[in-house]
Image (tube, rainbow, N blue to C red; front, side, top):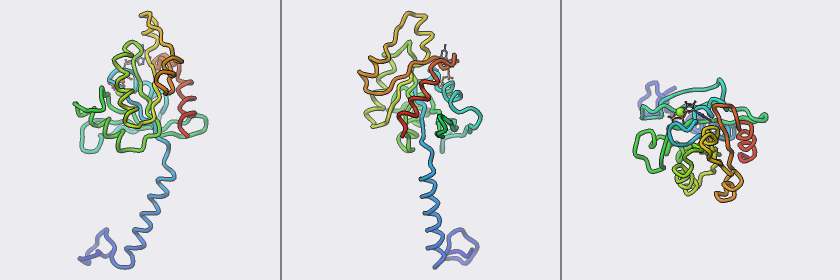
Length: 198
Ligand SMILES: Nc1nc2c(ncn2[C@@H]2O[C@H](COP(=O)(O)OP(=O)(O)OP(=O)(O)O)[C@@H](O)[C@H]2O)c(=O)[nH]1
Ligand SMILES: [Mg+2]
């Protein structure tokens, strides 16, 4: 194709062609938008079980790549739940939406720049009090949140009881209690994802 200015081979079309190709590119963007899978982002502090949940949801179709301009790895995959397909992204551990580390900045940027249809905030049932401030920050940022209270097995061993219904009522968000590493509560998580992502 001839260049718009220099008459050498170039990706920028000139004259009448321009309209055609840009129109085509625009159409492709429209198709991509229409075909975009609903996206679920797994968010939470380090070591709460986000990646275990990610693996349980996605199975084999997974890509791991550096977030643009950083050395922070982000895993993306696809989940099929009740015959519906979802894009799933496993974000780096974060304590706050106001980032200090590069990982937190990546997680924050990803949440605020990509279309996210549901944020699954994975928290450790043993330290709920320390983790809920991030839930409030996510809600304040206008993100649709599902709270996944993980490691319920360890909490129970310590005599900590989690009242799911009470949490749901107080926070006004869907809550699932689970022990992802033991495959407990994942069916309920999948059902809630389907219920809340329209
Ligand atoms: N007992 C118990 N252990 C769990 C559970 N879920 C995850 N784990 C363990 O917790 C550890 C951390 O899990 P990860 O999935 O790597 O945590 P993560 O949130 O992805 O951590 P970062 O990637 O560092 O942010 C692993 O050793 C898991 O096996 C659970 O429900 N119960
Ligand atoms: Mg992880």
